[in-house]
Length: 476
Image: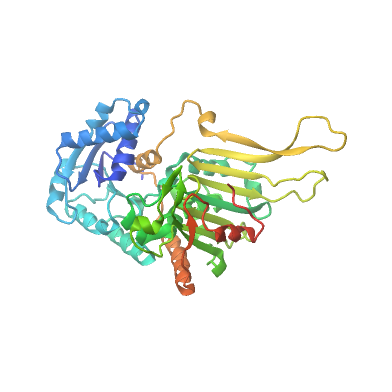
């Protein structure tokens, strides 16, 4: 797909995602002259608004969530916006939407609604002639709560849209450092020959949050950390770290290699996962309540997960992938840590050599750091004094003058341009759910319930033991 969309329809246009991410991202793209000149943007939601009221709503959102230096000619962007009130469960509003779109337009549709509304929305679009052979559709997560519900959503979408016009979004794939992981691996001869079980001891992936439930009470208690974070974001990061070199940087080639990794994931043993739920403590210098207090009732939903995963293929046999994610943890950080093996023989008898470590920071700071052993300056009577030193590539420093972009900017632009490379294919989603469902089934069979941990800590002590049994310490 190479044609650019002429009309972008935003479902859920007055929601929190639109206000915080989508509208600011589109404005930033417009300021950088990256949007097609003819592109019109139509927002739709149940709220009754005029075009000018929606433009005022967008202006307030942009002024709050987009830095002033990135807004450019905001008035020009606002003039692209129209609004059409629509209850997606009734057919009446689709006719007005179709009239606003007009005829012979390349359409891109972004669904930021509850997954339960995907099917009626798609059927309404089809009946109104807005799901023709040129239209493409983007789906915001969650895409189901297990394999069965995910398949039902995918079937409903596939009934009207072929796979090459379905864009399943995972906003982590829009982050610069995540994309830089692909460049790091496949544009540098330094790493790829070492990127295997002969030279890598283990990999760690951490996605830690300091926040609690916030406004996601109803969704989160029905999902938990495993479904909310591991199933999508963390497994996508794992797949990018572990995949074989694709034949080209093409959507099909990249996604073919990712799905091979996901299908090679071994089912977990009983002792290879830890779940937790936070209790009251201190976070960010403030006293915060526990999960049960925020929820207002007792719950077995996990707010923390640590996993020791294995990929059963030649490249990664015997290399554990440790993953952890949780809410109300000590600090907000998302990073990938690649720990290389120790040198086979040290010629420095008095030095404590540390293995090389590659740290790919994704948030809050985007950076890449490689730790190496080096000689401490000075003159010694015997031997050398060695110390671990980091080689840092901090993205703002390396690319002076480049703006830090919102992850949705890249993904919205790719949707408009019809590039699926950074989107998730159906077989990827279903391979992820198959592995996650097996973990949950194991928990139920074991009667596993979350261990408590204090807000502001790094999770339950059992997660430390999960790694330390193998002589591994979490990177902190």
